[in-house]
View 1 (cartoon, rainbow, N blue to C red):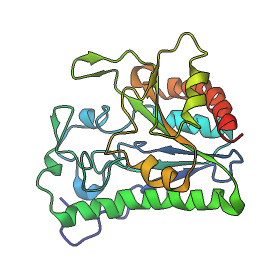
View 2 (view 1 turned 180 degrees about the vertical axis):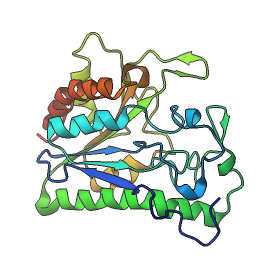
View 3 (view 1 turned 30 degrees about the horizontal axis):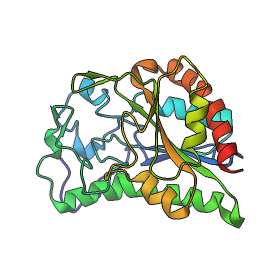
Length: 259
């Protein structure tokens, strides 16, 4: 267990974020908030099995592989989180709803119960803020000299929740700026084989949404999140195929948003 007053991350722990293709030329920053199922050594196994940690409660299955393929195909920079959403969720306000869940999809997370403010702050300092500070650094770099860019966050979602079988293959999440999500929805709907969700199965208008709210909205960047159903990209190979499949619609939508 983590000792009070000590840094969370130790020698041998993974870094809190990953940057890929930093010098990519596309006017688009890709993000992946739930890219990893890693847990700092100081937190052990969080009191759950490896099988539970590998489920959707621990990370966005296929999300990183799809994002990596998008970064390659579109020649776009990518910033990905380094730790499990069960350590601290990088798309939730620190200390707020869902930030460090005590129960996730009916699975109790023993290491998350009864945390002190110091323990919560240590998780944020080790795994949350470095990722978001890197996002700001990349956005500062990419928008230097007035360059116009978009921001897109790659997510994936479980095919069933609370007994409901979700029909969507992909979903576009957005709040009140239609510049990127509008064209992206239109591009995705050109494929008659896809069931496309508009703020489904989640909504970027939810009060807990952090990444889009904290980074894109203050900078007035065209932005949205993109969700893919996890049973469609349960292997790295399938996830990469989805990355290639989505590259065309995303590229066209970015071009339209920046016109």
